Image 1 (cartoon, rainbow, N blue to C red):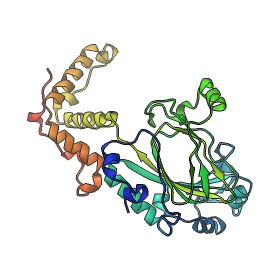
Image 2 (image 1 turned 30 degrees about the vertical axis):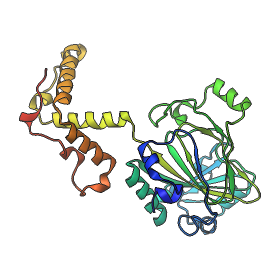
Image 3 (image 1 turned 60 degrees about the vertical axis):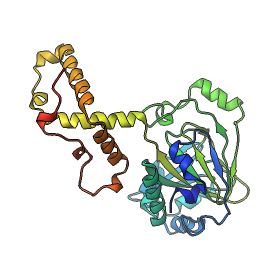
Image 4 (image 1 turned 120 degrees about the horizontal axis):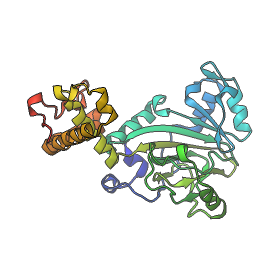
Length: 319
């Protein structure tokens, strides 16, 4: 299974440049029947109380419910999840790619095709109910509707290209002005996904999904954590710094007084890094980055830093 099963489209465009606008792919309702997850399977997990608490997040009134209310040891309280759903709450099954082999296969295939980190969750929302209220994610979300219907009111991003470490909703939330905007401004669109439909939702798009009709909704989300220019820079810098450990001069202790006035030490370190980057082999650095993005393509046990590592004599000296 691969990304093409979800999108049913020419992947060359997606792999060349990730869409920056929501994309919709309509399929036959039975497109994923027996392949990923079905509602009866989730009902069985709930009613036999075989969902471990580490895989369960309960959502109500726009946010997560405190686990102390429903977790006993490693398992939810017997019967609690079903009662919670009957009262209009949403069940999120986290880490589905660690529980179900076919979902794990799909997540791995997407990771291989894209070079991105991928994880999968499921969301089970009863009829007439909301899951999370308005929020946005710091990664691309592939929404795969498996049962029932769900509407997705969408607003354009408030933060350009958010990532988990910068601009994430979980750390900044919404400003008062953004909240007023969401309260009084209609969504730019509200697609309704039915069984078999898939939506590519770029990071940053604000959404507040809710079920439509008289059936509960079950959908999967494949979170694609895009690689960025900052990620490449951090990989390259990390490789240079790991190589610097081979230089005894770079392992030399700094006197305490140097740390009180570190200007000279900073200038020397900057000169060292500039020189190292200038002399580094671009092809070797590119191979190291490729290893980091596609670790499944290389033999296990060979660390990424093995690419491009050089003995001390080949390391650049400070400028």
